Length: 186
Image (tube, rainbow, N blue to C red):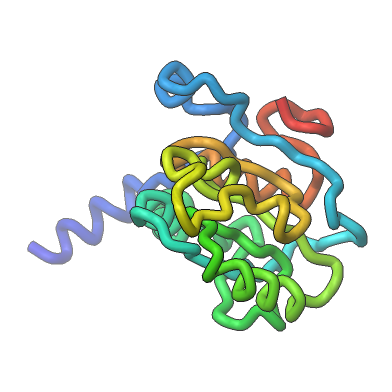
């Protein structure tokens, strides 16, 4: 029985998701946001493709984290684009921040950013670090990430899809959204 499945898998290879060349239209219909925005804030220097990502969860509902975790699986296979996750900010090239930015997390985020070596990029992933989302104005909530560290790329959504996250990471490196093919996002 085992050999039959093995033979079937040799003939019909498993498929991975293709290169993210466009936004997921079902998600775009539910959102009024533009998707991915790139800028040059703090984006000095050239990054190559073997990049390490340092993820900081500033206190989220784990929606963005679950979508981010899907990138390491066989369907999206983040490593084929040269990305990997690292626990050390000293080895990181890209800082990805998710969750609501509280006053208690401000020194932590600044510390992680300062430990990263140049060139470095910062990605605000999800609606919470971009503008505070539903927690904007709540006691102890700082709201926006761009007032703490220079944000290179924002990826909107609550949560964004893994394809949009992958497009955003590629846009953070190149400065060009792969779905649009021009600088400055949509």
